[in-house]
Amino acid sequence: MDEHWQNENMQPYAGMEPPVPRRPSRMIALLLALIFPAVYLVTQVVVAFIVMFAQTFALSLASGGDMEVLQQQVAQSVSEMMPVIMTVYCVLTVVSAVLTVKLGHGKIFRDMGFGRPDILALLFALLLGVAMNLVTSFLMELLPIPQGMLDSYNEGVGEVLADTSPLMIFCVALLVPVTEEIAFRCMPMRSLRRAYPAWAAVLITGVLFALIHMEPLQMLYVLPTGLLLGLVFVWCGAGASVAMHIGYNGFSALALLLSSGAETEAAELTGLERLALIPMTAVFAAIAALLVWGLACRRGRHIRT
Image (cartoon, rainbow, N blue to C red; front, side):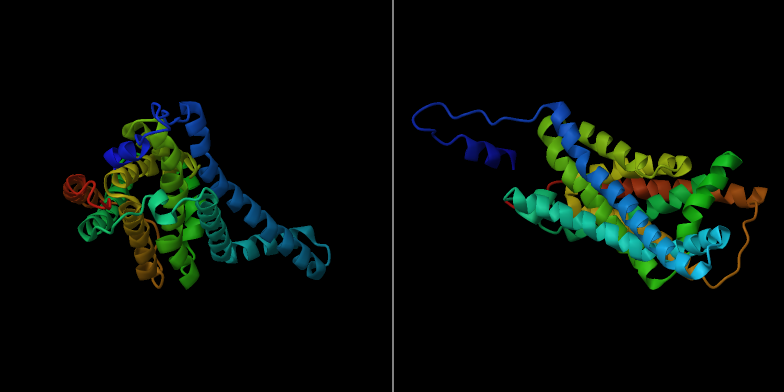
């Protein structure tokens, strides 16, 4: 791909030396890379605010002016509409990315990093997402995480995961992974790879991906997954990073569906159960390492020649 780019830009230029293509400065490239993570975050806030405002106005007409009752009704209504909110802000983010590429006279799939499908890389990436999900879950049980962080995590994430409606499962398993890969890998990488080496672009997008989750415990386990998603993107393209993200989120969605009909209470693991998790964690970590190696061996196979 680099040789092709050089050949295109080394054609004779009116009998003179060809112009040197201008590359953006690192600061400009970084600022451009922040645009779509910001779009993703802002659309979440704006859509949630509009829904909350509309619900507050509608319910205030029926509540008789009781503010306490109104607040409870609005909170419940917004919680029930969360799948719709997620769908709307994901669609807005994807549409804005597509329009940006088209307005720049680019080709959508090529410029976003979607090359020729490499079926084996897609399969490896999907399984890597599942393995990383399991390793993360096991480590959260094994590591001495402060109770305050666990309470904050359960309060913030548990409410979303409590909804097992078909639309919520679709959002968690498919729509959110596709949207987040476009917002945090496809679009930022277009700018970062022009001014930064690949490892720096992976680091920047991984940190941005972790920061956008905001909840402290979630940020800690999202960071290594985000870095792996960046590596997979650089090696095997956007299709593979989307597949890995779907594997990670889809496994969580499947677990939610399987447990939705059962009434379970959080219980402290016994010493024997905790001990059994150690070799299981090691096994899935080794599987993840083998899949990463397999993806590294598949690098560049998605590029059309």
